[in-house]
Image (cartoon, rainbow, N blue to C red; front, side):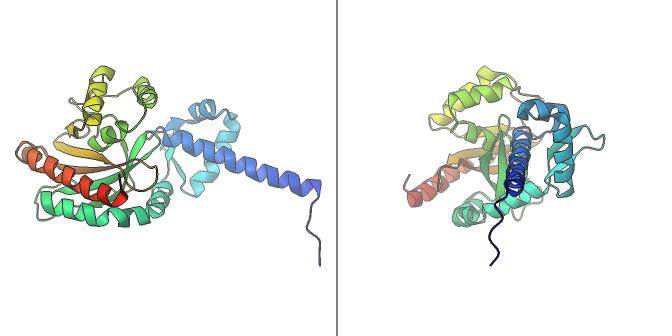
Length: 260
């Protein structure tokens, strides 16, 4: 039998492999915090890696679709493979929530999103689309939504510490639509209402003509989840009351099972 190779050369190679994985992971974490993307220089600054190292690792990860670069090759963002992997990882969680969100969909007859907090984004891990509607709102499973201007995002913010919320606000609240909240005090006031038992709302803050209502939900484990109902603006005022009641009922049914 050949004895295992314990030579210094092999040990050094293993350490280099571990270091390489750690560096790639640090780049992915930095990009996860900025769904809109970062430049190579910004990634280097945030990770403490040399720009040449970042460029080399980004090139390798782009081949595997773990990251994607913009056409001008300046911006780097999370690639299409990451949401796909994340969605597969949450398959059991989706099954756990599925009965409840299907019932919620039947109650409100609108699209229902389930999101999980990942970094500074609410990632859609499941959706039941509104049926029988000529006009309906649909999200893409795997898409990363900003926290400050979506109802699911605000629901996640209500579960975060004050320090983490302050850090997100300090990072800036870019205006996406004329209705987007761009000042910290107003956003903090909304978060306080959600924490006090209110429902998170997005009234055309993320997309013109689209409104949504959401609640944070305590599922299994320590992850932060949120359920949201999306609808066109023209149905919002008439149906908001019904949706609020249905959301509260849905959350209660889930948390009865989880014991929260």
